[in-house]
Length: 271
Image (tube, helix red, strand yellow):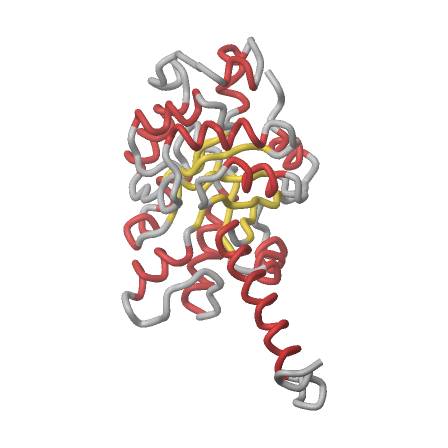
């Protein structure tokens, strides 16, 4: 089986830079995979991606060295097992709130006797290697998302779950869960209580010997997260990057057009 490069980077003490795919498009996945990310996650929870298209996106990324991950819609065995059978090298599962949730997640990711994953790697057997079944439990990553007040209260029990590789913080939902409507929604939190909560999760994960990941809106905040000690940082998404680049392009052109004076323009109705 092909080795999981995320694990190789971690063994060298290096952080992982993760991209994010919300658009259901193999071509955009192929483009993003060529931009230098260490890993890229297909978002099947809030992204516009169904299973069949997600599979073609995984195929499109195969030509690049990025590690393919999938955020599954929910803690559901069918969603998780099908994502792995399609060739994902790891899953990120939302709304894991208790140690029981975390143990259930691990069981869906690991084959017996470590878990209850059904054997049938329809594509992974080709994309990862014919010996996939022998090594998948060692190479496939299992991330539990921490994004609620309940999960924060149970963080020590969650991070102690055998077989869990890491926790992934969703700062928008975490802020909503901890503070309600007190603060605007968003990723890059600056409020002291939210920074404290994020760093607390990081510390408890590392204390338990597992990794911590954070979703970010900007490269600047992601760099801060790495300085804090995060092992994987996600920077924006294909949809946000497309919107941002388009907005900047139009804004630049509008500014240039605004500088055009009447003397620069051709007289109306003449040559």
